[in-house]
Image (cartoon, rainbow, N blue to C red; front, side, top):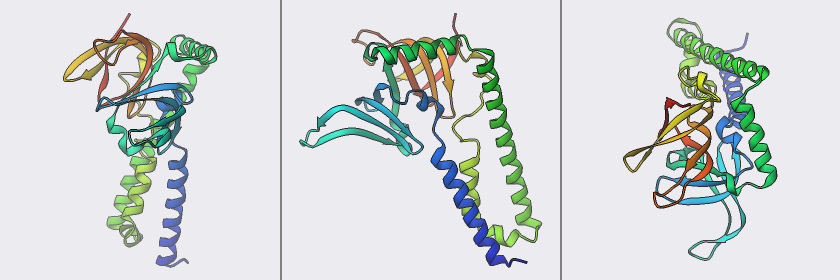
Length: 252
């Protein structure tokens, strides 16, 4: 029989490996949809960054088309926003008039698939939602089991000393895994909706097509958008944090 120390070491190693594996492969679905596209990043301070999007599990990077000199004369070729900095992100904007012919064709194909999803696409989405819901249920069961073992089981003394690692695994595999099933939004995927965005304490409405949502973001297509009121509107696709934007109405 393995002693308590050996079991503790094995537990720590397993938790660390599983957490690292999941963390290294998890990317937000909305952000992944815009990966490789030329975008404008708008932050809460009004700063605008333009570049081609690269998405990783730990954040995003906008790669400039050419080197840019900052105010101090340094050459910069990209802008990195780490995941913990997402609260300053107000919108990712993909303007249609900035897309090349190939990107425009890909977007039109994706729009058609979103607006008129095939039976297979609907089935894949249902399976994904089922898997996510099932996984979250399993995590809740594991949480309850671990809690009971800590109180009454013979392995409780070992687990009590591993609270940090247990919590880490729960966070990595739990509901915040990039996609949060939302029963109110799910029936409206691929349909015309109205997105409300909070702008300087005012609510602005944007008719659009709901493409995707995750725990952190909402992705919409085919809307008229402008950053400032004195600017002309431009056709665009958007990713907005759910902190600043919500789907308020079903459109027609």
